[in-house]
Image 1 (tube, rainbow, N blue to C red):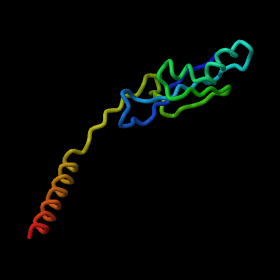
Image 2: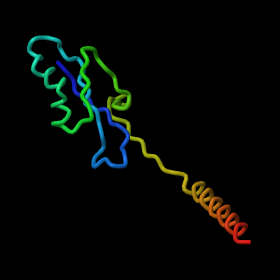
Image 3: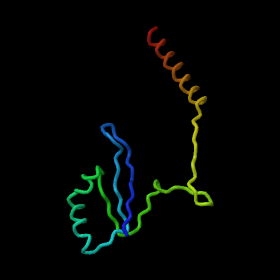
Image 4: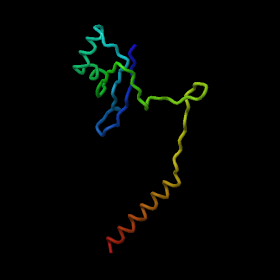
Length: 108
């Protein structure tokens, strides 16, 4: 049975919503899929769902970004990330001081 996966693409300036590619793997190559493949060739499926493109493979394709790490019990691992705001604040203050010094030098 075929599987559906989404490959998210980097968002561009003019994108109304995040761009993506639909990846279909484990797709059988038989006479029953002829109409489906014809729609793929004409890009009807991608247009219909808003994808940038549709990729179809007979083999199994692994998209690492879609892998969900699990703990030993099989539950998804959730990670909470906090930024180093103190270091960020120091960097911003240093850049502001540098810009002010350059401005003073230019005005003299």
